[in-house]
Image 1 (cartoon, helix red, strand yellow):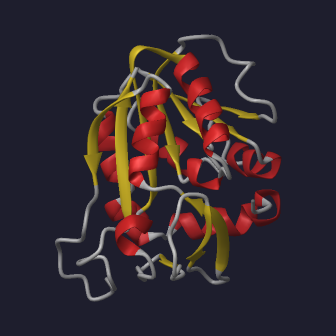
Image 2 (cartoon, one colour; image 1 turned 90 degrees about the horizontal axis):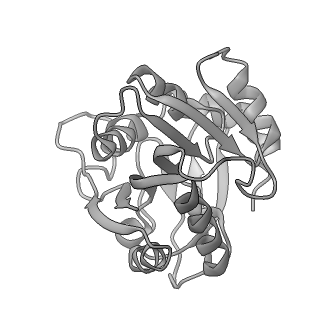
Length: 231
C-alpha cells in the first residue's frame, strides 16, 4: 500500500481540480445515495475530507474516518466543525452498531490486498449501518478502461488483469502521484458484498456526454463505476 501520510498535501491539492472526478464520479455517488439531508453518513477512507465536505454541503451529518493521521490532519485543517473526523488503526470498534443511514467508500477497497480483508472491512461497514441503510462504493473502472487516460488520471496498462493483481493509477497534477492498488473485478465486489449481507441494488458507470475539448478517453470509456447496496 502507498504511504498516504507522505502524500496527504499533494493528494488534497490534486482532488480540488480533478475534473473527471467532479463531473463523472462524485455526482454519481451522490445520485445513488439519494436525499441525505439530515442523515448520518460515514465517509470510510475519507482522505483529506474533500468528499466529506461535499456531503456536508448537501445537508448530511458527516463522520470521516481514515487510517492516515496526516490525511485526517489536513481534513481537520479546513475547520469544518460540523464534520467529525477520526484516524483509526484497528477497525471501527470505536463506533456503535447501526448508527449510520449511509456509508460511502471512494477508492478504498481497491487498496486492500486480499478478499478476506475486504470481507472483514465490509463486515465492519455492515455493523455500523442501520437496517435498510445504504453502502455506496466507487472505484476506477479497470474492467473496461485498462490503460486508458482521462483528464485527471490515467490507468497504467496491465497485461493480465486477475483478482489481486497489483495495478497502478497515476493522478495527474503539478506533481504526478502514482497510486499502487489491487485489481478486484466488479464481479468480485458483487460477490463480496453478498457474503457481507449487503444486497446490490444499483450499478452505474458514466461516460462524458458533453463536448469539452479537454476530455481524453472519457467519452468512450467509463473512468469509474459505482455500486450501491443495502443492508
